[in-house]
Image 1 (cartoon, protein in one colour):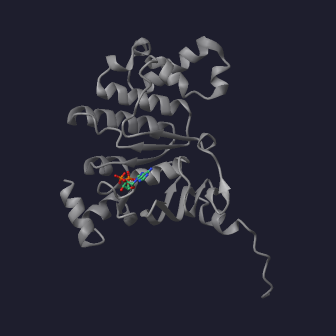
Image 2: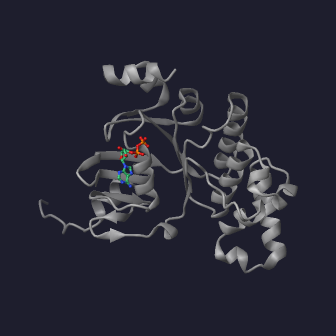
Image 3: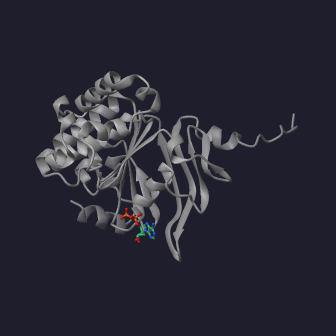
Length: 263
Ligand code: ADP
């Protein structure tokens, strides 16, 4: 029969995203007259890890902020689990997206101790359990990022840079996110600590089955962390692929030069 079924309004995007956690379609973003994102398309599988690499100013942080719901796209759509959360008239606010976000500076609240910083991220349902339950959950989260539970009483300024970044991660994990966005989370660490922290974080996220997007300047990090690498340049994704293919077969000369420079 050639009879066509009526076109359901949401079917195409749902069909395209059956297996994808995050789907970004033709997203653009301008700040004033500056076009910062110029048509970005990206699909991230459930439980997958994507590294976004690219020169400073290419739009990586802006893309993460759009995914988190801190900014609206000018055009295009963002979908989570097949539901449009931004664009096409849709808007789901940040706090309803089940996303954890660790910003580049990973800033902790300086006037709160470590335990209070982490408790700040807890879902309201966890807070209803009372102080003992909150303290137990905070200790559990500290353990997840390989910090001693006794750290809960310390102030952020009493911690090393690496410890502060782990606390920022614990605070983001406290939200029990389905999707974790990490913006250069290990950049403040020296080389040795960076590798150890990266391993610990990768393990925590993998065990929790959290889909992860990591912005990084560090090729080794992208290679060891990600099953998909996206190279951003001038507000576009110049190449997306598995790490081996991206690094051994860059799509064009500029990508090859950028990746070469990053070594
Ligand atoms: P990256 O993370 O790759 O370094 P960003 O997304 O931080 O890139 O920035 C891309 C461009 O967008 C930069 O030129 C930056 O100055 C500009 N930009 C980012 N956020 C804003 C904002 N809130 N207002 C104006 N310009 C912005």
